Length: 293
Image: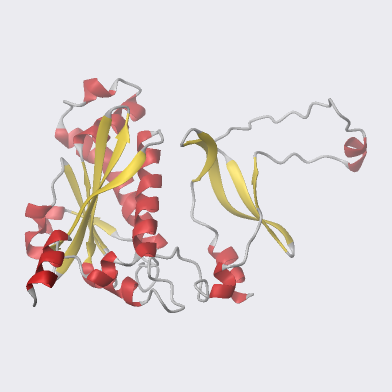
């Protein structure tokens, strides 16, 4: 190995070049973690990459740093190995749940915060596996497992992000099986789902699909109404929307067969502008239909 190549690998934490250059993978990884973290923190913050490096599975316990580390395994398809969450995230999440001030919960018993954070940590592992189409042979999600008891073969890609919010930097880290990430990088140029593309169906990476467009609408609520009532509508008419909430929006796509509900979302603010954040994955049936057209 040349000295130049060795220096490049050392500066990138030993991450293979084809993984570093797989921009769709990094974009999708950041977007998935950002959406999850903003949901946990109940606020919108800017996510930025802190570090990425390759770690031997046997040394992962030494390379993962964070107050709370959760392990995961999937017998048929390993991808998400661990999720690391710092104490600031734990305190903020606990404050949301218990309706208390986060500063008062920063010194809460670690076991209490560890158990409280396990469901959202598991949800992140499931969202990553689903987004990258890395579920098990029968669609199995990653299973929570004691991190200390995991026997990890091969290398892992350890990635840490920081979320800047209200003068604090909240940190979240993930450990992914390097072999699985390399498989995504290898498939980035074909018609399979990997390469960091969001999951859906074969053919979504084809240029004719990628370059096409579809109109999306966000629906606040739907109210049934008779034709007679519709004919009486005029400027100034008030239509009541009982039970409507901005966290329950429906995202629809206009297709040749009419509007189709494809996801659920909630209204919020992103970069000082009104925005809608998706709360669910895009309906796989819609993605398959798009890929088949």
